Length: 534
Image (cartoon, rainbow, N blue to C red; front, side, top):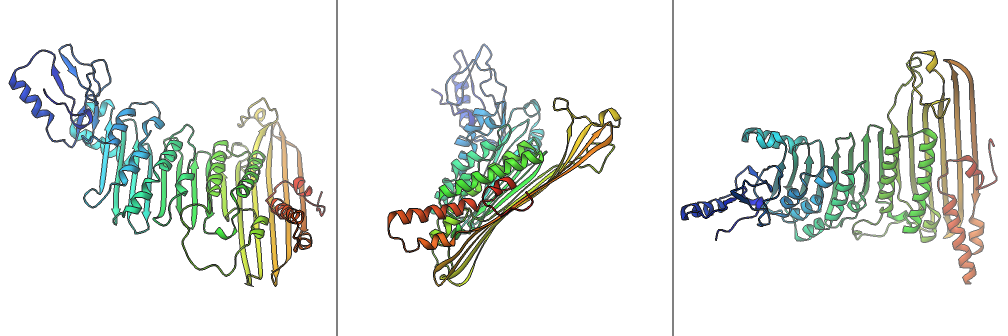
């Protein structure tokens, strides 16, 4: 009996349904054992003629499928090719890429001097199936290098080896590449690479969604004793581009799309000031609320704001917990557990979101619609010794935005050169906020635990009716507070009773909560009694 190879390894095999001569049988056997060719056209379950029967990839008879042929770059029986074959005809990008992130990372663990690269593609378009080998080669090159949707991952190991993975898609099909471009992988580095498989798969599936989402937390959780850095880049047909970087000292995400651009960068090397997971989540929730308020107040792009919030949450939620801490001498100055309780719990960061600008009114080009939001946290430790240390943590935000709005909420604004269209309000927003926590010790005793907060909102609204300015309003709001908790904490400095310890812990947490950034002057006013401008 003739043994048939799996579908992906050789072109489709057909056998006559009637008995054949011994010469025909020998010919079939020879074809089945032929070496793979550089480009293979495979009939994936193509309907057989009445006199022929087709065998599927599993070796089972399947004469019912009517799927068109697929053109493979190489005839290979491996997990990646099997995965590509399963979903190449799916209608959405997520299905095209399903399982490929995990499969590529598994394959990366096998890279070595004699197996330093892997490449595969499958094309199903009419142009590819009907084209000559030369046309197919051109289409294959375009698919690999210029796919309409693509994701690449570059991993540098601690020993200096570099692994690059990529997958791309266009209307022709799907392509993947894998290379060991430098160095040699150790067994420990292979294991660390393998641990990133699920993380890369999650990132790929998030980017392939409609709309694209960020799922990058797993890529920050690598073993930094074996892997030095992880870089991901994506370019999607909808106009979204993503750049992600993570190493032992920092993490960053930058995204751009039709709505604008955003960037989040976290200083992952500031472990000395980070708090517990619960504390970080509290701070993240506060910042997400600030982002929502700023986006609503300045009319930011909704899709870009969602990506901004996801990036901030994922990079800050894992800050200080990725990898394996390297051994080394203790720092001369460090925040104690009490100090950390009074800080935000987050590593230092900078973040920004900038919307695309436009001039929707052809009669007033000076009225520009735009959105720009900046937010950051910076912490300093200073002093001559641990007993005489000072800690300052300052967070701040800035919002500058402008937009047009129809005078009637149910009537879309369509500005043109006619007076009848010139009925609108033009809004200009200029907000500033800051929060600062100052902690000081002298001779080991706490002498300062001060929280300073300020917030200002400046709003200008110009109203036009039939092109004429009928009103202009200016509304400035401002509030500021300063509170020092050192005395309350000193009272319980020598407390031995459980009640005293509980009271002290509550005060420490209160400082940490009040020190979180607040951009609403009314909320700042609720934190204290020293007010300005309200």
